Every structure is written in structure tokens, then in C-alpha cells.
Image (cartoon, rainbow, N blue to C red; front, top):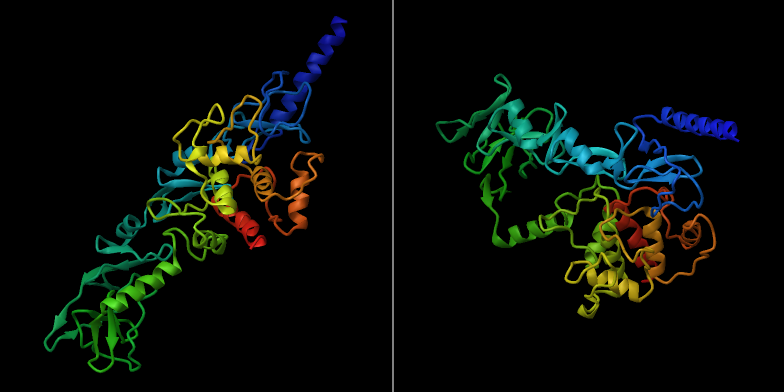
Length: 406
């Protein structure tokens, strides 16, 4: 009997060692802790004697491996750490974790320079002098107002004028490799720009107007925009980019703007949306409830779970969702409002919020929700059940539910 127990113990230890040695350091996987007790978690649907996993990870039963939970990554193959903190440790405080690509990125207005996220203006000035700055278009740089690019000196130099208000012909007002401002509406090639105060001469020998001015063909000068023109220009810019960090390069840009137009999402106080930040359970519930029912009354501002106190920004949304049987919480009477949420969990909450029928007997627990959403054209095919739910992906998924009931 003792011999058999010893053999089984040896086999179990070898099993664990094989699992540990097979984990690549670049993958979000961690080795199981050599403990036979079950460590229950929101992703653990298996019942029985299985290895427990390190903090912030869950047991992937089909592959017999522990994996980092949503929003967590591993560097040593043995523990899971917060992805956002890992990025900041590697690239600096201006970096963030992109849940869609599962990579670290520099925040809005910052670029990668020598392995650290730095201000784009600082990067431009380090390369081209103190009078250079970011153009606001990718990693392009340009000269500050009142300076032109000097190819010989490879720096931004003060604009010089000669007798007769004639502007010296300087190659380009922007740092090489960047795009110039929109040319003034003058169809003829000009050797001289007649307006040195509010305009400058480009490399194509045409006059360009500074910001806040427009070209006047009659006077061949840059005239100040009227108040009405400034307001119209502002409206166009606002319509073009509702949020400071949302442009054509952002995945699901249209969905974000659609929800904003419906007053379902507002973004942050600094004017950003932060599309690649990972969504938390409370955030998803708030957006889902708002999309379907609007703002709940303050009557729901009460403690309905052990970890959902009164007077929190999410309380009335969570308690409304519980009252309407959208969510149930966990067995310990907690809701875990600040826990990161997965795609499958988000889909379940939305299907319950919008009252779609689902076969809840299928396994794994989310299979019925995926199949129902797919049949209704609501599912995002590229999304994986256990992947982190970024704010942009959530916007796309929620917009599909909203549009389906319009």
C-alpha cells in the first residue's frame, strides 16, 4: 500500500514538473502550485481534485494548465501580475496595457523612445531642437509657430524677412518626413509670400496660412477667421474626433461614437475614451443598464451585495441589475465590481439585460449564450470567450444589441 502511494506521489510530481517546463515565458500562462486542493474562481467550472492555481489565475481544465486571469500577465511563468502595472514597469508611467493585442503601448501623446514612453514633444525636441514639437499626426514632428525648418542646420530657425516684406525662401516649415499645413487657396506658384505676419512660404513656393487664418485671393494675404468660421471649424473638429484618443486608427471607432451619440457612454473627464483599457464588471453593468433602461432611480442606491456599498458611482446600476435578475453575484454574496470582465461574461450580462432566450444547460456555461448571440447576429466572431474585454470591444458588442432593438 505504501509502495503504491509512493509511486502515485512520484507520478503526480513528475506531472507537475512537465507542466512547468512546457510553459513559454511569452505566453500568459503560469505553472500550477503543487497543491491538490481546489481553489475556486469565477472561471473554474471543474469539480474534483485538481491542482490549485496561483493568485490571479484560473485552471484551464482541457489543457491542464493554470492561466493568468483577465488583465494579468506573467513574466516568470510562475506568477500573474497586473498587465497595466507590468507595462508601466517596462515602459514607464505613460504606458498602458492593450487588452486587444495583449501588448504594452504608449498612451495618447506619447511615443516609444529608447525603450520608454516619452512625450512626443520631448522626442521631437531631443531630435530637432527646442523649437520643434509634435504635429499631432502619429510620430511626425514640426516647427513651432514663427520657425521654419533649416535643412543645412537640421533644426528649426526663426523666420527672417527682407526689405519689401519679402520672406526668405526656406525649404519647409515642418521637420522632414512630415506633412505641411493645408496650402492657402492660391493656384499660382509663388516666389514670394506677401504676408509674413500670418502666413509662410512652403517648399512648393505657395503661401500657407497659420492656424486661425484663411487665404484671401484678392489681397493675397492670410485673413483672420470670423467668429462664425471659428465656431464652424470647431464643430467640424469635434465631430471628427469626439474623444481626444479616438481617431480612424482605433478599432470600433464608429461603435464608440454611436454610443456617445445615444448618451450611453461619456468617456473620462480628461476628454479621452481609453479604448484599450480593460473593462471592469461594474463598468459593463452600468453601460448595459443605461443602454437598455436609461438611468435607474436613486431608490436603487442601496447595498445589495456585500462588496457593493451605498453611494458608489456603480451602486444603483448593479442593484437595478440584481433586482431585474440580470446578475446574481457569487455564492459568497459578493459581486466583485472592480474585477476585470471577460468577453463571455459581458455577453451573458447583455443577453440577460436585453432579455434574449438562451439554453443555459449547455457546457461550458457560456456556450448557450455564444450560440444564441451568433444566431441573432450579435456575436463578435473574432472575440474569444476568456479574452479580456477592452472598452472598444465592449462598445462594438453593446452597439450591436442597441441597434438590434431600434
